[in-house]
Amino acid sequence: MFSHVMLGANDIEQSKAFYDATMGVLGYKAGMIDPKGRCFYFGPKDVFAITKPIDGQPASKGNGSTIGFAASSPEQADAWHAAGLANGGVAVEDAPGVREGGGMKLYLAYLLDPAGNKLCAMYRMP
Image 1 (cartoon, one colour):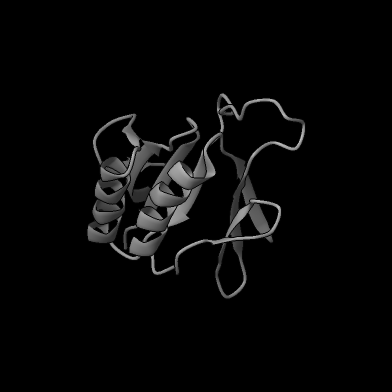
Image 2: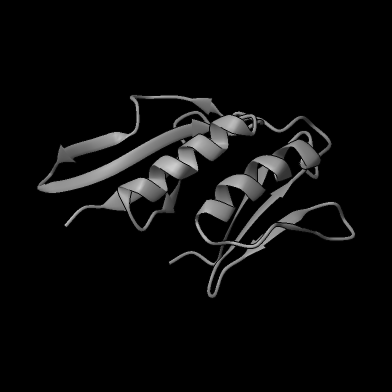
């Protein structure tokens, strides 16, 4: 459905350290910084990127926005969460765990990245 997701970051190196750790847990290689100073993480059919806003204003979170990353297990979601906390992330919402609703059972772990963007690692439970 999506080709890419790009989030604003105020300090690319700080955010790169956070995303190298969290994306590494999900199986992605370390981000690559291009000549314009943007950092990219490439998957087989997807791209995640961080950049300083092109309008020159500080990056800010989107109130009500969450970017979700697919986890392959609850353990991977927990490892993603721990890597984020160890690299400048902030825990938000409830602690990682199972949430049920609408006939679905999901394992969710939430963080704020160094720029305040809300993220989630999600595993769809069988």
